[in-house]
Length: 438
Image (cartoon, rainbow, N blue to C red; front, side, top):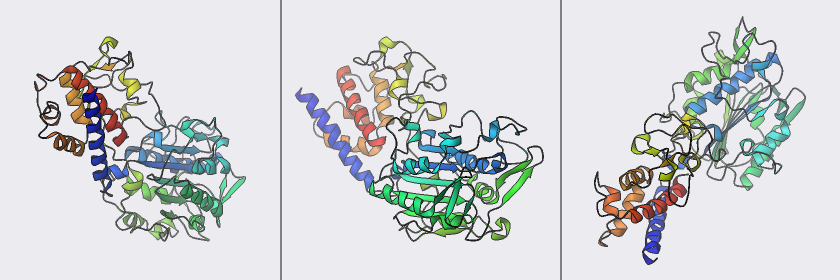
């Protein structure tokens, strides 16, 4: 037992050291992992088709840049894909060539139809839900979260309409943000409104850490861009169209800033003058990257070419029975295979590709924990380099047989290393790494 306690203390101490070191790097990838998006279409009726296209266009953008569905809250007031007047049922397009269906199978709508109302939007922001509200309808943020909020619809001077019969004022939104601040539910917020008189919606914001951008000023309208003669309706608004023109060229490593974002728009093309409010933000928008809000750069937990999976449950980790990799590291779609557990998903039931080295497509798949070589490879892919270095430096001079194998040993380096020691180190290290990375 003394050896067990020593090893656990070693892992914990090194984790604290590595975490403290990484926390000092404010601009690091690790500081940008907790990004969320709230995307709201407030308009009902078929003639507002373009508002659904606006919000779905931003949905695909943030998803392409790495924010998973588990951290995207999508609110669609009108079910345009299923409207009887839709000449192409089950689809939403934002260009007249109809290249991309924005409403494909991968779209996950969290609030739809009558669920999109002022009360639910305010509850979503403030976290004041009924206890029975499912996790996919909750904004599970904290004080380290960067939140991107995009809202589109019809609005006037200091108010926006929901469902064409209910209004939310700039005071309502500002007060909700103040509650979020007091509850430590955000670190920074980037608010974009594509509506008429959009800049009036952020007039009464008064909480720190918020930067807001409206597509039009007071007494100005926001206009649609183009229509499709077959669908018979305008497909997208001008502000969103020109925003996407720039966003589609971005990657998670792009260096576009909030300031450069404002330069994508020409007043003569929009027929309006977008306006940004920065006095609450407390940072230079010229040095704040767009990807701090629109992208996720989290480090993969595993690389498929470093792991072997076995479908035989008897090869699972002792003590966990047939608890397989899908329940340990669940994912709902193939694009989340390497992103680890997400706050909303819980244990995944679907699976990723069954290609060699990938997740199993079913059954009680589990890691081949009885192979020390496989385990050591896995640990080297899981643990951050700083944690490995900290562990190595703490055991120098102790004669420990463990760290040389973990830090840099190659094939066959596990000779003489007891299987129990490997298992114990793996369990402790995975637990520690999970706490650091998730």
